[in-house]
Amino acid sequence: MDKKKIHDFAVKARRELIESVELKLTQVGITRDGVKEKLPTSTAEIAFYVPNDTKGVSGPDTSRRVGLVQRLQTAAAKDDWQTAYDNLVEEASYTWFNRIIALRFMEVNHYLPSRVAVLSSEEGRAEPDILAHALEIEDDLGGFSDKQRDLIQHAQETQEPAAMDNAYRLLFLKQANALNANLPHLFETTTDALQLLFTPSYQNGVIKELVTEVPRDDFDVEKEGQVEIIGWLYQYYNEVPKNAAVAQPKSHKYGDQELASATQLFTPDWIVKYMVQNSLGKLWIHALMTRHPEENETELVAKFNWQYYMPDAPQTAETVVNIQKADQELANLQPQDISFLDPSMGSGHILVYAFDVLMAIYTAEGYGEREAAGQIVKHNLQGLDIDARAQQLAYFAVMMKLRQFDRRALSRNISPEGIRHSLIYRSFQR
Image 1: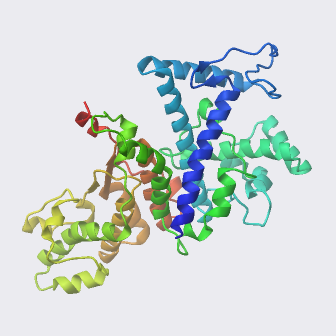
Image 2: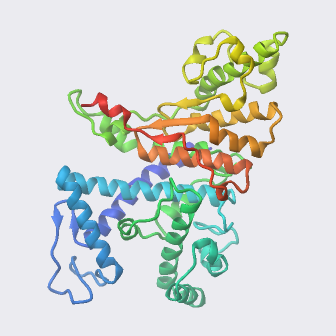
């Protein structure tokens, strides 16, 4: 995994997404200083807010702009306009970053329901495969209106750059909305505001850079890729706001998002393995030894290949796993009885490795991998985080582990309900 390339992409992507959102807001007459009036060049059909703008605001974008202004005014009534504006820009930027990264992971691993790439081409095309196969996967995208179908056909037939861009924007949003049925806690139905503030392009910008600058194999779980890349991308994306938050004076009162940024740190892989093996792993080894006193601890651990397991580190068995059993209860412990909690889960790195350890436990007990994966998501994993953005990615990471072992997982309506966004830490700030 080339972490320098991942770092450089994520930092650049955040900057470009924020700039893109702010530019779009300016074009519709919304700035950090307030709402602008229409220019005299406006007509009954098209409103212009920026000199020399040839496109203006018209059609559905008119009502979307009204909704944006109302949303900002409501938020500004609680804080102030500039705070409301900054929060909106940040939300729009990270929402699309999360979705773009998720789409890339899913298309590389062929996890998309349609199996058709959205950001790239696996058929050697200059444009993403979804543009060529849109009409073939209409059902996977939620269907098209006659107008939408005509737009797609026109783009396919003419290959005109403007028509291709319009068709791609439509298809990208259709795919994001369609995935709400499979991953509802990440791909929430796109609001009018988010549609207005993001114009996806496969020819330049964040999508193009992700495909060309971050090695494909870093996402491919059949090669060197791991779900772990989601966490690294998220940490690097938050590098700038984290540094800004940490630099605040000691007397500064942190808001929710500042606190989330200031306290985020991606845990290295070896530390994750040490923690999980000596908590979850130790609990299970002790259960096996209670059940079979003749078994040797070292030999049991060797069967699971837990290289960071330490027989002399009993204290960690009480730090992460929120279940404590007496010896007699341990003898009857079943995999489904274990509740593994990460109270500050971030993007889910520890939960993802706990999934692997639990998979080893379940399969050692005779479960098939597909059944075990479903049981783990339903019964074993719990996580909390103050950052809603991190919660989305932790949810996605666990769901991708599930999909790795169950091809139909995304259509089974299975969801890790134990992974939640929590504002529990607010009490320490007020």
